[in-house]
Length: 134
Image (cartoon, rainbow, N blue to C red; front, side, top):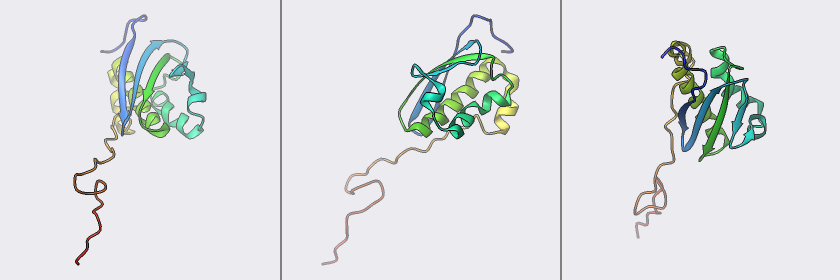
């Protein structure tokens, strides 16, 4: 799809580790609300803010859309990564020609790492109970 109707709302999901970000995109002025908080309040670290805004900078649409985001799970860094992926995916839904630029920068790659489950008969995922020969 090359472009969307001016009133249409686009929804996308991004994940990183156990964090999930659901995003709604509307044409606007660049306002980003995360869990009903301002973007800079939710992510106070400037490096995280820059990481999240990177897909918008690469596609030159920083002030073209408003985003309403709901995040949960993981930690603050995981949520930032999930939001970056969600923004990249929603920008692809707006204009598929952004794919080459976003793919080259690694913005479309999901981070699948998660905590490994605990196994039966051991105290953790890999750790074993102490072995006693006698």
